[in-house]
Image (cartoon, rainbow, N blue to C red; front, side):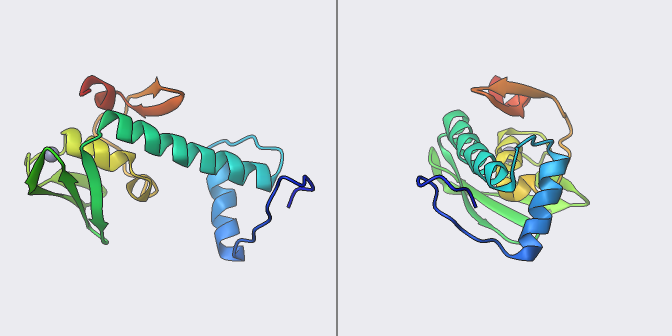
Amino acid sequence: MGNSPNRKGFTVHETLKKQLLVYQKDHKYKSPSFTKFIEELLEDVIRRDRVVKDIFPNFSEISFDENVLTIKDDLDTDLLIQITLKNKKLYCSVDKSARCDHIDFALSLPAVGKLGIKPEYDENIEHDGVKVKKALIKSK
Ligand SMILES: [Zn+2]
């Protein structure tokens, strides 16, 4: 860990560290050290989370088990939206579609993002410094 008095140390399990190093390479992080990479990654997670809340303030994740993500919409509290993952594709129970706001929201969640699902429309755009799906911006 760094030598700065402003840093708090932490340790990660060897298995997680291997996964993180793969992630670092895959996502082209050019961090000068592992510690710096972890800091940048966490900052990205927080920023992404804020952007998603900014775009879809009424959606929130309820649960995510192996194949089903359940989200709720604060504008329609009786509605439970289930996104099913099948053959590396997402399907929305409400819109009976693979292309809707719920899918866009699901794709923005870290838990779904790490599954490496390719959206039907793989067009990214920068929003507040974060790459998000173009469909997300349009739906605002
Ligand atoms: Zn939907």
